[in-house]
Image (cartoon, rainbow, N blue to C red; front, side, top):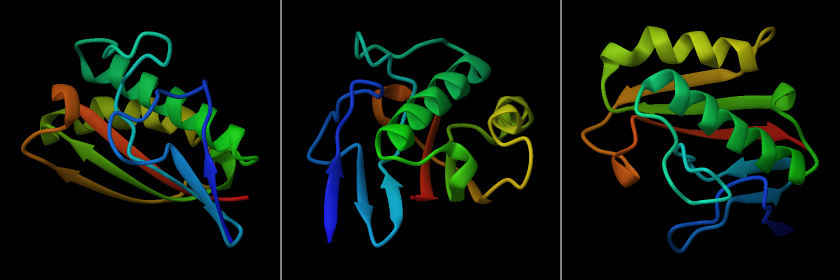
Length: 125
């Protein structure tokens, strides 16, 4: 069984995708960039502000699905520049203070809306 998650606590999809899908005891989020859910505009021009907004968006989405970031088992982080890794990691660590999920981090050529970071999450329900 598969259920679409839609919430005002995360930005509306800017393409043909769902904010998240619940399936088989997991929630799979779409990648989130630093869009303000209220305005649809990118928040911040530096990596720390964008990372915080991304993680707040993800928190809102997984909570709307009935889960939490504490139940995350895997994340993928896409960075525009690996030079931002330490600053992103500093903010990321605040959201996953103990028993953090598995993670992959990669540098990419470009992200939607020219964002500096995009993150997706897989969490237990």
